[in-house]
Length: 376
Image (cartoon, rainbow, N blue to C red; front, side, top):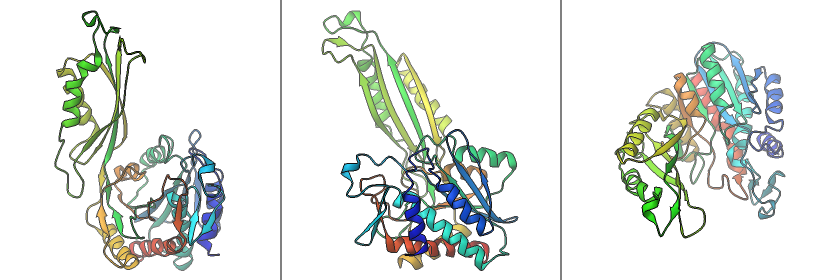
């Protein structure tokens, strides 16, 4: 059994459902200490974070990942226990195989190989892990980034191991991510009997025109490789359950995925002003998940393009699509960020899996990236 496969299996066997780490980071830290890394545990609340570094000065290259996983769902729906790694038909099955314990294992093996081959390498190579990527992302990389800002910790380049590939390993290079902003809107009315509407005020009726404007607006035409900003309503609720009662309140949850044309304060201001123009009696609570980031052409993108072209046999698609990742907290520190990882077809699903061949290719991919950036 290969070194990376053995480590990935050990990690999958630990049921580290957010925010639990289940000892994954301690195991990684012990290995990296033996390889000469300085390891710092940064626990905040119920969240474990690991910062492991080798070398000194700049440039500083960080490999970024997470040890937490989403819940497996009904165990009986899985063909095998989600926390008992199993290989079937060349695939490694288990919760976290693709998202992202396979990448974490590959990071560790790549770093061990790198410092063994280049013990006096230029600059600093680092690994940052959290157990709060799949959850609220409050006490994970967000909090660590605040500490880095206070310390003046420099980060030049960041490679996140999120599952970014689509059909085959290396076919997509993520060079940015959209921002994410969620709104919880409550429109107040006056409850009453449907037969006496003059004695009530229906918040659903009052909000319809505003919601039509909100959902029908074209926010922009995109930005470089970013798609246009999108607003999607995710939940709508009103009423008591009775058909003869005008509801006293309407709740609408929505989310914006936005490109660098916008930032959260401007979007919040625009939407609040629009709701006020419609004369609604409302309250609106916001949750800012992260601002958009974009890595322009430079050494990081060039190195990744070259390495992925060799792995996949063709130049990768360079994309800013998908959801969010913890790189959104590292980019504001001044770092250029990319995401490179395995095929994402089974992530968060029952019977999550990853190709064993892809897993065994990942350490070489990450090692090649680190060597191109730090030793040329």
